[in-house]
Length: 237
Image (cartoon, rainbow, N blue to C red; front, side, top):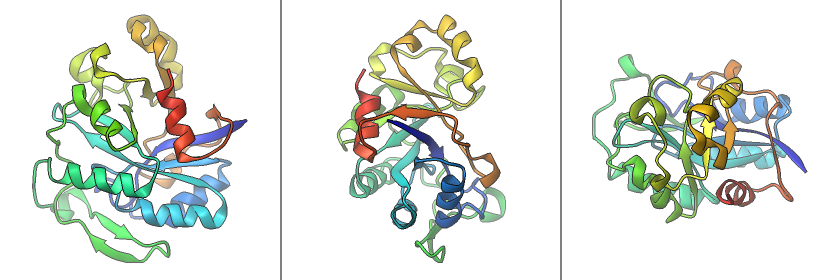
């Protein structure tokens, strides 16, 4: 069965995320757009996933707990997890293994934690944007230890992508999928980087504003819809 997705969305927890990107606004916008499943992937943290999952259960939309990891090379990678507990555990690991800089909200933006009623329940004081000490070469295996899947984000962009930083996707990274920001670039990139022909290609929004979220245009064919089934699909190569 076809399930429409957007697997890369930021909330107001990301300092570059708009304050309108609350759990309720994100999930309800996804539902209005005809999506079946989304992933909440804030920078180096999963602390707003609990609220988004709860809202999703109320309105009938699957929310996968995730994160956009910044590797030691300043490469972004999408990480998806089967359960909230796994995502939070990985988030704690990342917190203990990333550069510690105090956030300056007036420069970078606030990093707000919310509950399922969109009430502020906390704020992360350390800036979430800096790199971790997890390399792109080890990211896939590290996330698998927490039951999840990891793949390079927006590989077609000129910054913070594996192709812009390294120029290639090394087979030894172990990736089984890759994300594009612009699906129209898929054919060209596959010619330049044949390894992409062997990977599942995902196209997601990387939305930081509600108006940037995807309509129901990209889909996965799954026997059932759950976080685990999406992870299994992306892992099975």
